[in-house]
Image (cartoon, rainbow, N blue to C red):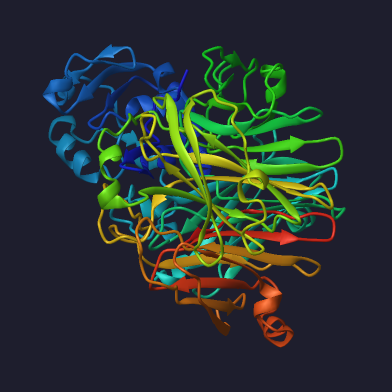
Length: 632
């Protein structure tokens, strides 16, 4: 049973969050809401005023229907008679006939209260405004549901059995004019109990912050935990999502992974979860993102291409975290099969952990769209869009790393994938191209880059998946793939996944080339590269993908930035159009500059001439991590 609340809306190839579920389900508001409903249940009858259709969302979270409801009243006459909370809705003008306490299912309800007072007199009114967050938390107190008032996200935080995690990001809200933002944080354990909550000041604009599980555990005197960290950026500007890099590391040097922010919007389906290989277990970390339990058999898993869904037994409490063994649900599935997750809008984009005989790694699933169908215009747009949608992924040095790629359907209506793969050298030269055919939805076609490039790259390069309609097929622009990298020396594996975009053309198709700050086309770059702690090398692979020829070279500035946001040093690199650059922080910035930057520093990758796509990682003697970067 899915959560009866809209969590995000699709706009072209972008999905944007809605605010109501965040406001009603905020952990701090949830406590007030439970107390409010308890008080209402112990009082007399209530008259639910539901002008916006929000009462059923509140009921799903907190059980409003268990109160003594005398009637439900709506403002739009077209809604009169609709069943709401078990009652036939009545017109609001009839509320004068009841003596029940009005319950207003709306935030910022003062005007509505004034209007109702004309017919209800001095009757006390209750409602959503009773569970508002403190006014000092809000950047826009006049519009409570302003998305910037709810710049929130969840992170997976674990500190147990030698495994640790650290959230790392920057105060990019300050760069958009936020004068005094800070973080409110609440840590939940696996059962959904709040272990700790605190407010953390943020540094000056563009300065960094980190939340280290070891420090949290020591600060609050906690035992081992593996659960959800809720993050809320107070008084935010510019972005309504908390973006971050999450590093997973261990007491030993052979535990190391990197993932990115979880998306703040629970979805109906996720995909791109690999089935276990022989000798592996795949654990899906489900983080209940609402103040209501996930009912038993509400979460399911199926092998991509199959309609046979295995459902998870057992309820998951509010804000709780469960480690779901997907192999137990799909025992015959083996890599390179991939899995779909039926999530019912109960949790944010989950991480999965692959546990092998000697190593573990963590990566992300992705949102599987429910609204997309094949775009009939794409096959005929090659002349205008060139390569069109490109999914760029690094090819790490083949003499050290094996790179394999598995294309993943990421829309429920995607029946096949008509694809080609292009291997590009650092200078933009096309080193190899292979037509992959019209892959069926449940395909198991793993592309091994070793057999594609035959060493003809010049040390490293990148791979592009593009649509190829030579055998027909349909495409929707929501192309994804899992890229897996194995260190030939240590055996350690890192993997990442992402989706395709149109890159570096002036023409706009729907919302592409995508821009995160303003309308398309997005033709500039601002990427965050966190610099790892002592004892690690920080890697970065920047790809200059171009759907059609653009500027011959990038003008890319690498700005080493201290934890307080001060710029320490800048180096400029050039990347050929259609090419890439793999570099390390310690080879670009000398020891003196790195010492001046200090701990928790980062590199801002800035380019005003083109849009780059980037991947970052850390490396030790025993392990490495790798994932795509985020921008702000």
